[in-house]
Every structure is written in C-alpha cells, then in structure tokens.
Image (cartoon, rainbow, N blue to C red; front, side, top):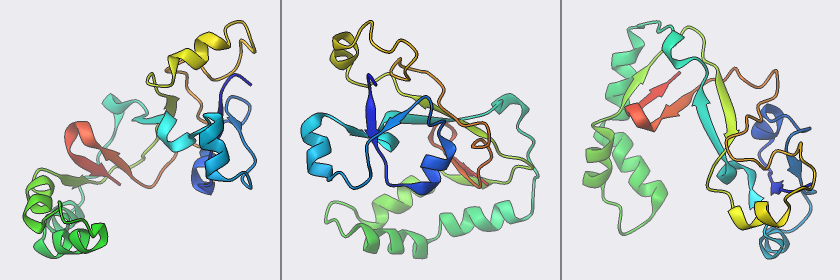
Length: 162
C-alpha cells in the first residue's frame, strides 16, 4: 500500500471502505507508527455533507432549545473545565459558541474524503506503486453503508446538524 493509517476509532473504521484505505494493526504502538510516518486516519480525512443542497431540514422546535443550550454559560463552563487549559477562558468559549446553532435534518448523510494536505513527498516516492490505492488527495473512501450519521459539525456554516 502506498499510504497506511492508524485508527482505533471503531465508528470511523466502520464508515471507511477498507479496500481503499490501508490500516496498520491496532496493536502497533503510536510511537512506532509516528516513526514510520503512519498518520491517524481521522487527521487524514475530511467529512462533507452528502448532497448539501438537497439537505431537508426538519425545522424542529428542538432547534432553538438545543442552540440555547449550546450557547449557555453552563456549557461554556463545562468546556472550560474539560479543556483544563489556562489559555481557554469561559468568555472565549462563549464568544465562539455564540455564532453556532443546531439544526435538525430529516436524513443526514456524509461522505469521507482523504485530504489534500497529506505528505506530497510520500506520494511522489510511491509513484507507480499500487495505482488504485487511496493515496490520491480528495479521493472518496466512504463505505457503502457508512454514509448515514447522527450528527455533523459544519464549521463553514457554524452549525451542528443532527
């Protein structure tokens, strides 16, 4: 394989077409993977909405309630506590979350693509090898039954779609 990945997230493994993505054995230590240049699968993927223009929104009354909870000072306080970072204040979290909203979709499907920011030198080193491998940037690697999801964090539109 021209590109291998490390993944311990079972949910993600189920969503990826294993014939297009090569995974190292899960018992291989992260330090060995790092030394070999094996990256985390989650870091090499970009999730996109499937047919975003056709996304049917449910316009549920829950949207307002969930958005207000997302933007609440209690949620910001919880995130501040979990992060346990002196650089992250409750005010900073609240400021960022104020822009976000929750939307409810009737059916939510996404697709997974390998990102373009993978190590280009690795790809050049393996030119001509395994031409069908999933190393080309932007290639979709979603399994046939891995498109339906419970939620999608859409940073472009500052929304969480559920």
